[in-house]
Image 1 (cartoon, rainbow, N blue to C red):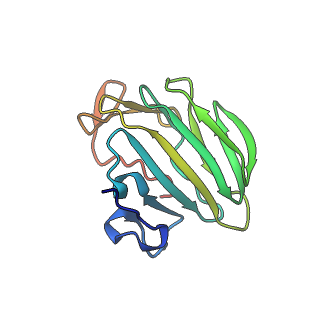
Image 2 (tube, rainbow, N blue to C red):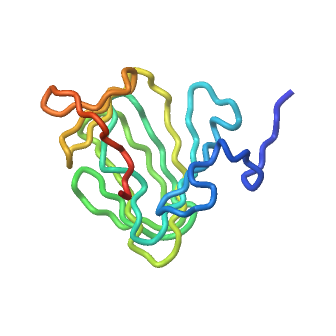
Length: 154
């Protein structure tokens, strides 16, 4: 039998920053529901906050929908204004870097979905860092970086 979940009743272990004390809170819906091949998240970004560090994926395809609010989609060094009901799909590839920035006075709410790819390499062009997901290692210029974080709002 299928289990029906509720956005307002997620167990705390499936919410990053449940009290929303930082600039970003994420609800892990796919993980809560037991999804195996897709991740489905809802990101809540406070004013002046960022959804992620600017990055691309080698293998992961993604889909985004703006559920509420306004912000900027930074995509391949372009800045594109986005607002409620806008959506797009982003193919995998190093040339498809992306990031959302909340430039409004209200919370930006983003549906963030994609494929789960164990062999994905995530490239952060602003820092020239590659994160190797399968090894949980960050590298720059071929050298391992210790204590590096993908946290966008430090």
